[in-house]
Image 1: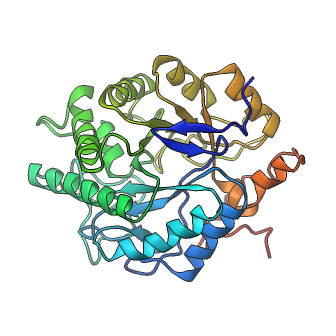
Image 2 (image 1 turned 90 degrees about the vertical axis):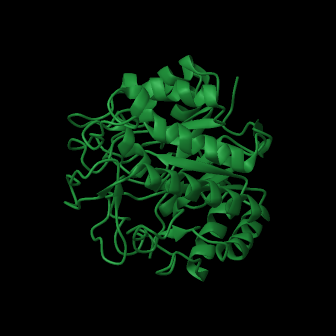
Length: 357
């Protein structure tokens, strides 16, 4: 029988348990994306709390785009030293830290001080922003930026990287027919819509080598009209497996998804782990580890998931905002569910739980 506290390995990276802090927007970097004491303190608290592996908040690989306020950056070599400090802090607690690499695309309230990229010049359904349709040169430049960000991450001591191909950020938009209306080799069929994403992964893999963990986060479904479907997601996951991706984290939805079908949902005890069936089916069809994120709250139910499916790891986000020490609590024997009530009031100008004073 598998347990949530099993020690495992992922592309040579040792994990002390099956719990992963899923990438969560921190909003704690300065205007240029550099670290602050608040950010370092937040990650230290997470590492102290017992989680085996931390995935950082979305970290932009380019300064061509406008950063989201408070977003981390890794777009030049000045970040390497300060991230070495971050990784050292986390490693002191026998915890891994993976950096999530992203280009934002059109999910930004303003184009001031930088352009927005998109596969096509289609207005964002929520923000109303219209991105610049990327030329082939832009796509190659984006891929170079991801590869260079990965090299910096490796130099800074991160244990791996995760490519953000979910939630409506730039790479995921190449997979979404509504936002990708290209007629060249990067648009049209699923094979063509997957091309820019797979090319980006290959550039990263060439940059960091075969022994460095490279994970992907992807939507199981966009849950919107003319969105990527679950069948298309399975196709992409199989392509990632064939290409050599280390593991895939299954999420779903974006800001323009149908009500309560997006990335972050209100849940009850009956609707926890809301991407479970999608992740379980994908785990049956590929031979690389699958991480499940989305509404994971109950220790006993999560134990059942890893034993009744081929899902290997459990990713958690909002509960750690309320309880950074959640895993240590579970280790101590107090197995009551996470205290998070999924109200989503933690995501304001400052990322904090309303119940923590």
